[in-house]
Image (cartoon, rainbow, N blue to C red; front, side, top):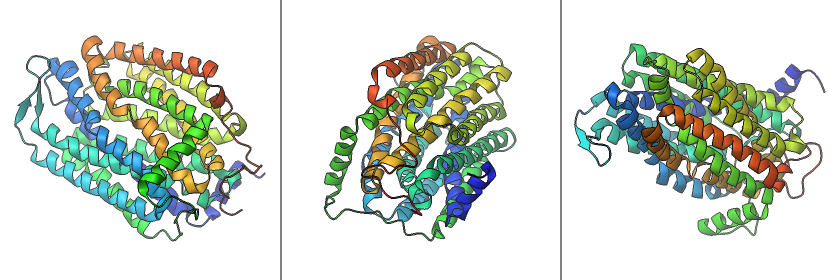
Length: 447
């Protein structure tokens, strides 16, 4: 088997794996860095007395603004990935992200002072710069939604089936480390320089990604069947039909729909949690909390490949969902940053474990010809209610406060994890045998 170092070094002997790893890490690190700037600026856009009312609603609208663009992108992204060169799609998505970042930088630089009064609590308003930021963030969210399935379907082209767990863990743990570094950098820059200068960090990350992708040498055209649907809409229908025929994947999608909704209710208010509940108004503390979650995710992403999860992936996933809920409950129970940081880290670990297990199982068991659509359908299922959850998060926080928002969502996630363990029988059987061929699965790279 070789040492752990040998097993990972073997991945870099695969053609272009290193370039692919760095490009993905930088692409994934950039949007969270943008979000640190936007969330913190919005949280501080109102006087302290209005942050749990006006600020909470403004933060929730940030997520709601990206609802339709994200869903539209997710709905069609899979068919685009299964019909077109995946390298070109990744480059196009990255270019759109670059343009969106430039939009946001210009908005923050000019910082128009006008306010828009809106229905809601007495005196509620949105600063004009916040209104202008919403479509820029929506555009970035939509382009990222296209990039993810194109990236994930490329992994089986680079490594063998037996290496999927290690490859996904390494790819996404490095991405998590990059996210941690970018969010800390953005948070620190907010303390010392303007928000426009802080946005320069993600802009440079996106730009470097474009350069790396332009030099990517592999042919990433999909393996299309001669009987593949000719129209985009028929291709979309075929992808959803495949998902409905795989009960385990369908249950996983339903589970992700509910869990990500509940997580969004809490995490959209994370900046407010730091500023209001923990009482820390420096941007570096918010960046540290985000970085702790991301560092935990990196540990989970990498650590999953050291667990014998393949044949029992579904059961492992359900256990880590329960742990997610407990971590959020812990955040509701402390007002100390030194207790909140390890709790956020644990949340990140369990989330990272879930990601590696899910990606590897899909890549090992789904044919290449429909894999993009399966990942895109998961995007729809996973993220369809996230913007709604962010909006609900603002309303819940407005009604009960930050602490009770975390208390309610943590309890709901833990309870749902237990319900799934009992009721989702097909999801409990979700998994694969890494050394045995799966019927209908695409052949791995190098095999």
